[in-house]
Length: 339
Ligand SMILES: NC(=O)c1ccc[n+]([C@@H]2O[C@H](COP(=O)([O-])OP(=O)(O)OC[C@H]3O[C@@H](n4cnc5c(N)ncnc54)[C@H](OP(=O)(O)O)[C@@H]3O)[C@@H](O)[C@H]2O)c1
Image 1 (tube, rainbow, N blue to C red):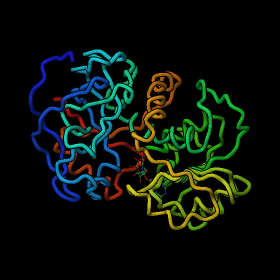
Image 2: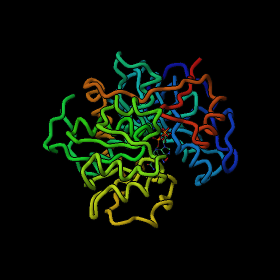
Image 3: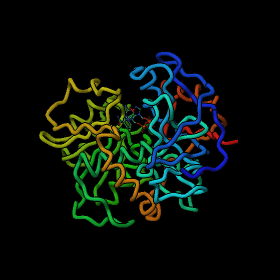
Image 4: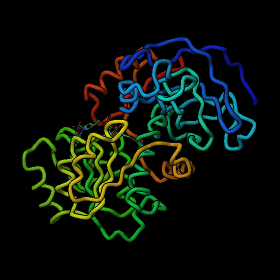
């Protein structure tokens, strides 16, 4: 292992009790041969961070957070893609480890689960290329079976097939819509009216407000009938709409709203569900392949999720509460960690 000057301890956001996190001093984690240690510049918060905390699956002491961007300060002896001093973003496998996570001054990233951040991208936005982007890729290129596009323009032969995106202004949706347009699909999405411009700027052909009572009828008018595929990104809150918009036998990718996915498992309707869960152990090969493609996707013009930047790890505690209360809209809460 090659090292820069690394302290023995660090500050991190840690699971104190079921649903409660606190900032604590813990050891800086060791790295394995295929891992790098990042000095975290930014941590980006995902709903799963508070959902895992509330579910308390791994219990007290677990480090919160996954999505990070920062500077490499140490590399394992098997690492070939990164060097000390590189700017790297990706996944620190937190929410299940007492040693490492994203909401910490130092974070361990497997070299296959990160990418070198190009000069064109600042680290705050680079941190949004984590769970949100990876999940969007899994929805489209794994669960729904589309091929990766090869450039900025639509290149495949989907011939304008409709995709329904329930939750077009979510962080996952912001990437999914961009990927879908590049895969040649037509997209109709739901969002609050205030976010219509944002969803359309990402490429959606049409947006409908999910608060309106005739939302299903509006979507079916736009698409000319039920559609072959959908993606439920609203934590199950849009599932009643998804099952009416996707035609019988069609594919619906469900990104579960709770760690077990039970929330919508009891009402699958007539669609074929494709549960898309960002469990990186199970999907390691897919996720690694995705991260190898990220620099190309960025060069092709795929935009990060817009960020709302907060200062310091102490602010994460309130951020978890904001996300839990549903007060995050069309943005990613990102925390500046390095002073
Ligand atoms: N299990 C997994 O592997 C996995 C991975 C990633 C995400 N997820 C889950 O997927 C969901 C999305 O994650 P995220 O990070 O993208 O969330 P997010 O950006 O934090 O979600 C906030 C957005 O949700 C939208 N929303 C809320 N209720 C809605 C509804 N009924 N219909 C349509 N949109 C609605 C809001 O839209 P407006 O402000 O426009 O109303 C808001 O922009 C979360 O439940 C998350 O836990 C699971």
